[in-house]
Length: 293
Image 1 (spheres, rainbow, N blue to C red):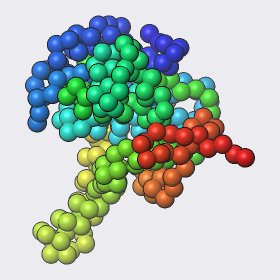
Image 2: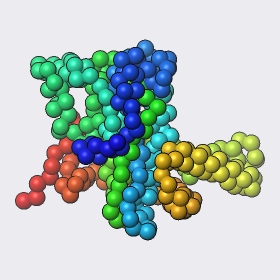
Image 3: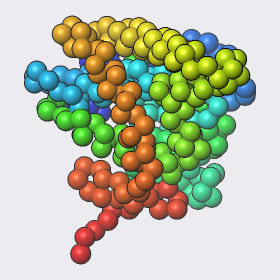
Image 4: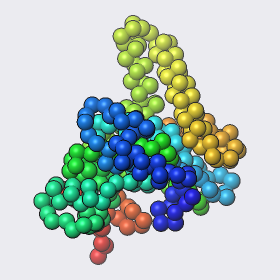
């Protein structure tokens, strides 16, 4: 089923499973949460993209589809399983209004009327992350998952530059919100992590011989590719566009190659454009539109 308001598709009974998980303090069906004793105060779902464009080649949308079903999904599930910090994507979340009201009132030392806590986050571009932080700090809450995914359909013609612009925008937003994690993000990508690992193994075990370095790097990339291939096809099992599945390697390789340049571009600037409107991020992490004179 789809929602015109949220622009996402979800499977039948997703809401029922989500409410059950929230009420019973469950994360992926388990009430065992590592490292801390926080209670589940938010239910989130793995967000993925489905390209519905009628264009034969739509590289930008396909790259979005690839990124969300491989790199993003891997770390989204990992972070929401280990729970080292809030990791919330705004496509589909469920939480109690009373918890959010209480968190906003407590953290800002203000009076919040019933149901008005959500309006506090209208000033943020990354309101999903800020809501997660508020619930984490305000009611000692963490997020849980219900084993469901939500699907954002993308239509129209998207260029590779469109994909890069979207990634740059959200990296810049995250740079202000979670600086440390954003700065080390390249080390979580296949090419950089493979290069670091290859050099380390070469220096420690192989006495400086170059051949084992490249053997390890090739092996590393093959394993990474296989994991992404399996994950992509499992998450996109509903998608019968087999002709695009055949182009998986080209799209995957392009996504991996672009990851570092996109990160460098994002780190070298601070401007953010959202729906044609430029914004700046203020010290309190809220966003302010830039009005041209």
